[in-house]
Length: 296
Image (cartoon, rainbow, N blue to C red):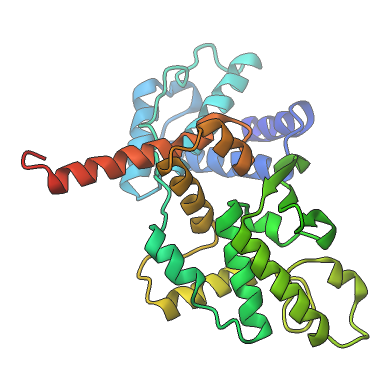
């Protein structure tokens, strides 16, 4: 398959794509070539109908909408490359349009569920106090878990009530801390002073959240913490760290917060990303109307 080899070379050398991205393109095109061979078709005989049938076959084989979208993009890029190289004269993929990916609305917890979850940890011991502070911080600021695990003590000002986080693409933002979050972070930090013995790695103590061995928490550890308290509290929804971020944004929006402010707090570079929460709110209103209105 000379065409595939040339295409891979083009992606790597001319477009400078990462190894993972190039590998994904290559897999998609090789899968398409398998479909060609199975149907005994040559590359030059491919038309729009054949490509559309290929996408239908992918759907029938239970490929997700997002995967089909990616494979479509790979095919379109491949055929454009073939045109530019003079390998084919007509581009059958130029009008290829897969079914649009359905927007998946984010899951969130209502206020009672949030209150139950956050108040579940036993704050009479250090780890329970740490977990309460962690949950208060996640819900109170809406920051990402990847941001939480990298928070250092120098980034927190508990007297003024704010925290500095480094988000995607190393973009720094300052987020206000609520009174309750400040209270529990203070109690946690005070108690952890007397818990850890000397001789531990001093650099670790620069981080806010540590495990019982004095090592910074990982993403997996935070996921387990949230899942643990979800089970204890009896919340039936599927819990994951990002659900606190979704809940933070949804509850702000319900309390009439400005969308631009929510965008800034979440660290979204594009407000379109933040607007998903307006769709979520509209969806909730529709359900409410359907349930309670006599002609809903």
